[in-house]
Image (tube, rainbow, N blue to C red; front, side, top):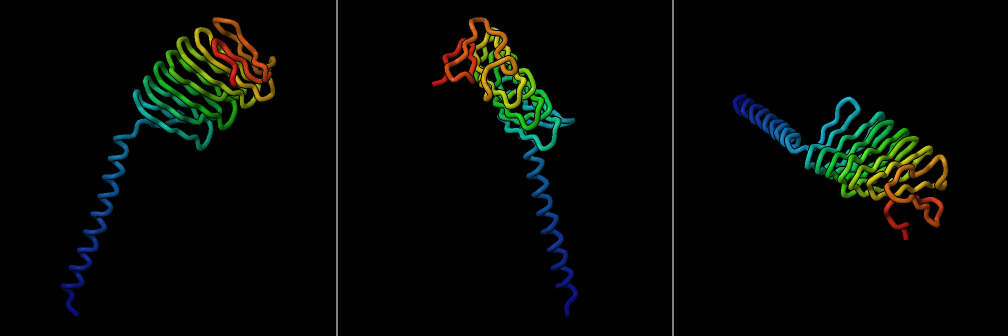
Length: 181
């Protein structure tokens, strides 16, 4: 048996493995440089101008969607914040969940649960109450709050520049928006 051939083959296999490992590492580093979100200490941040889809694997989960981002995220036992100019869609994995749409949000939708939803001035928001009590503040904004158990003291739209309207379904309250269809 020629040991030179065996040694060369082993060397070639090692080179191939290192090359494969280097390729995987380079791909991972490349993916990290294009990531538009980062998560640390229970908070996920969608960078300004980013397009993010963020999940929550274990509460607490807070989400911070920066200016002009497009953000779909899951909160749990925490706060979801949609900064000015961002479009956000938040769901709630575990109460309490609070949604803060800071203003000038073209679309900011979210689930409140045992918490507060706020739709800042110049925003359009659609909130749903996953677990009462839920209260929405829509002063200076157009928004709706859907209460599966009905609009009452445990689920209410509390602030609106115009008049708060309770829709015929008894489950939806609106501020400066028509009732759903």
